[in-house]
Image (cartoon, rainbow, N blue to C red; front, side, top):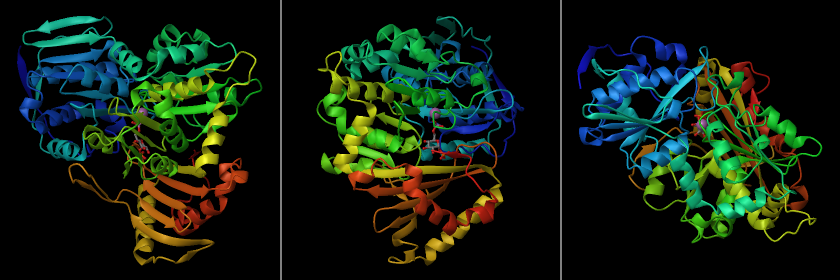
Length: 557
Ligand code: VG1
Ligand code: CO
């Protein structure tokens, strides 16, 4: 294997955010931008973590993945990696990469994705590094990678031809091997071990149950047919936008009420199906809808956790522990308390769950941002969440005869709220604000927090405490600070402010609002109505309009 050393100079700004490095495609294509970052990853690892080792390479099918895959493979070979397992056409969802790393005992992997950010020549590209447990690299590693991007001086490139990613098979170049693998099979096998596929099949084949799935022209298009149609017997027309496209069909592959308009339209139409779901660019997010009914991600993880032991064989001994990200509503906390399970609150971003899972303290977790998952892999998992919901519906309806009314998604949610109370929740996103203005708003809030006192009145609410969330990992003691500004009131209501760490332009301000409602007679209220006073309070105390000039959020979820 001939290896060439290519001199390079560092590029500023290659710091990873909440989930990998995300920039416009144009930025990644300039000079050695991508190559520098990949080389910096190898410079950050100890040689035994990759020399003669195995790396997995996948992606969400977006524009520039094919070219980027060739660069990554050559640099991996140049640095002494023994084997790269790459998904056919460079495609493999984020949870599937995590599953393959674990199953094939690989040393780690790269995921070429900017998740739910739009794709195409004018839009975003991204890259993420996961290590041997299949987990997104923790901050200790991403900080090292960033440090190395500031000093990288040579790129080690193997002199090998481009790999034909379209055909399954093995190519050998001296001591280096590339395996083009089916991106679905290891993942599907794992799903078959986690869930009762017969239960799922029985539900899906019922003539009185209709299921639809929207892949948003993103990576789950490659998984939907083999899993839902070929394996579980759904009809092919249950799947829409099922072909992964480089620009996601001009779409914004983010499964929420704003961007998954088609699915929402179908689920709120007359004679709507019983169950609808969608996933995002790289297949780690999910949205769950019943007929005319939206399940918030915060409720979704709580409902899955409450029903997991009964409905999902993987959890037959009960979950080990539950966790959510800080801004996610407290619905899961109530389930943990009732089931007497260990419970953890971590910062935003899936990388904080992995240590708890590796330590055997955590089984089911979620984020308000449409991320739900478990310790079957070390990433959130969109298809897993859909199968978890179908399992709950299948389990609850397994004895229902034809002609009997099925228990619906809405019934399950109403029942859950009647048992635990309802945590009304909403998130307001203000995308692409001017960075200076967003930072000023954050400074203003920090100042307010430093002056705030318990028992202080904010309108009708009484402050319990206000802080900037900080997390100490119970496994390795590492500390993550400045993870979100919280105003927590004595009735349990919360207002939280954060700046997004996944955007590629300007600043996105996220405002999270939550209020607990024990009274069953109020559970059918619209969340926006129920939360109105708290939302107004959030806008007043933050002076958001004054700082940013924004009258309205870009997205409400
Ligand atoms: C957002 C979400 C966060 C999620 C992250 C990655 O981060 O809020 O909960 O883990 O995206 O999801 P931020 O920093 O923009 O708020 V994905 O599907 O992009 O891998
Ligand atoms: Co994603």
